[in-house]
Amino acid sequence: MRIEAVDEKTVQLTGIAPLVADCLQRLGEILEQRDSPAVHQRLFPKPSTDETINAEWEQFTAPDLRHLFVTASETVFRDLTALKLDPQHENLFCVAFPTVHLAAWMSAINQARIILGEQFHITDAEMERCDLDPRRKADLGLIRLHLLGWLLEVLVGFSSGTEPAA
Image (cartoon, rainbow, N blue to C red; front, side, top):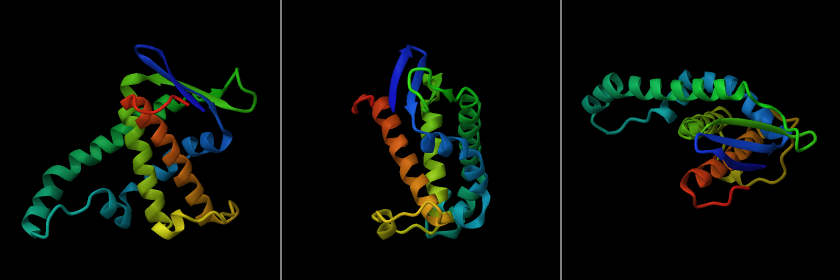
């Protein structure tokens, strides 16, 4: 996979493997889980041990943060309507989107990773596993978490200019 600036306003991901494309296409169903109680606690952790501060945060800050999360997801969903077979690479995919959407992509992908981690109760030890069986739902969730983590790393590196574009 490669990420590059098409021009000043557009970035393009090319050579997207089918498994990564599948992860991107499933972002919607993953992100729909953001309001389940366990996931809500991970995405919106209490900032303090003081219940008054926590109640104020939940009342005044959490709704705005949720709105930002939803907006980022909607932006990525719109961008993903352009996901198509890559004419330069057989059996691979590509997508171009506005450069100003990079932060939304990073936000949505990070949300999805947090949700997958909570949904499948993935521990640090499980993150190190190499014996994954994609036929097992929990292992497939872990594979998706890893693939989205790699994609997030590529996007962050590109955005910051610190990583190679491939």
